[in-house]
Length: 212
Ligand SMILES: [Zn+2]
Ligand SMILES: [Zn+2]
Image (spheres, rainbow, N blue to C red):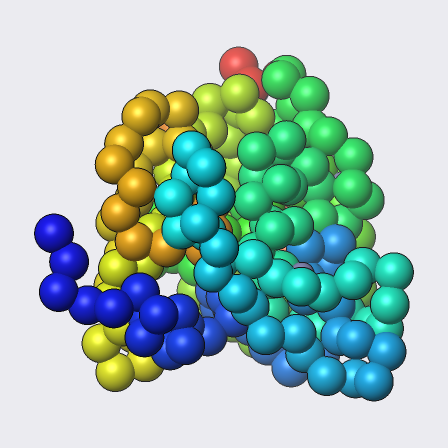
């Protein structure tokens, strides 16, 4: 099925990066960010063959050491946070009836940043007002239980751009390519331009999914 060497792909794979607008200088580190080692060096990701999951990108960072970086996800943390629906700001789980908030850009209906609580999204925006400088930044609001998860499996690198397939996480699928991140696709969502928040949070309901 494959004419490429996974070893070659693994060597070419960059550590997963945030999508815009989070990939901005000064964006605060979250609980899903890769941790630098005590010496300040970013860990190099490794590909292992995991039984039942095929080739999986792992990060050897130690959360107890060093500081976080704002521009790179730890693939292990990211997959765990997505699967358990944990908020990257506070680390707590989003309940079924809560509204999941995704920070992204208009052109990207899929998300690699795990869902934020409403209050945590507000806190993140207050902490990093540089988000207002991103013209197409949006918040996507969705019932937490109406979000579908997919694996992003990289099967080739074309220049610096990875090529990927996206099998659902809840279905058996041939292990094809390297699973680096889990992707969330909210259904029944609504999108709010971030610029509407300038001067304070816009009056968007953070209540029951029915209010969406
Ligand atoms: Zn890591
Ligand atoms: Zn939170």
